[in-house]
Image (cartoon, rainbow, N blue to C red):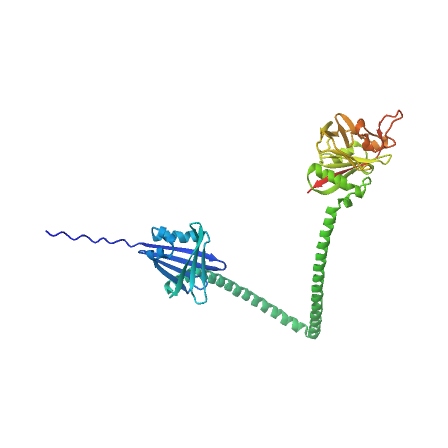
Length: 415
């Protein structure tokens, strides 16, 4: 008995298709990779010249002979993954020369070295069916554009119709006016010509005026910038003080910036005893709840001194410790800090702006201080702040205080 013939087993045909968009400078390319039974067909389309297609065909065995890296591939699918990774990592370049020769250049690292592989593609006849499909996809919105144009056109027709009706109405009125004013026709014509000439003159003058205004605005902007820079560099110009002199403010500003670690934007006066009144109620009304203040004092002996408080002035009948507080003498050009940072602001309703330390008043000014010549201290260690005022000693030779002549409060605003 003869053996029955073995059935013929057909290897299934391997088919894979992948498409990629490649953007390179101002050019965009479309790449198609088709795999049909171990044959790789690679196509390139130039989106700016879509009627041209470039192609190369390779078998899987031919691919392995191009470079050693392809020997590690198990299938044509590995080649597709390799191309996809090159596109994602921007390691692919496409060049086209004047002879319509397209070259694909792949850059990759293999065995710790930079490698380059080039595939040269040739132009082939374009599949017009595919081209038409691409054209349809690219310009499918033309129908929508046409609809919009049609709507706009219909609207223009309607508007034109309204304009014609308005024109007809105007013509009728014009005919009536002409009929009623035949004698004024020439006069109106002359007046029209004269008005046109004047309008032209006015139009020219207006253009010149606009140019002058623009130039002036540029100069103003430039001047404003210079003014702002001057203000930033010299804040003392904005200090309306009868006590501190212009060249003395830098010392105070430097001390404030060192304590607060901030840049000063503005220094604004909020209280002056000789103008607003030296009673403590007025001081608290104008200065309470405002942080970061400078107080300048002037004694009857024209000694000038003061202090900085970062804490707010209040009417709470208590002294509040202020670690950023410091005192100063303008006459001696000296800043006084507390080693323990324990200066306090005295927030009592019957006091004006006063400073203390460890329960002892350093600068204590009570209500109506100018009237009653009261500006006291109980802290002998800081009497140097008063600068040796001739009113600072009592009849028995002990330090008692100085008479107040003026005091001012300024708010510091930071950037």
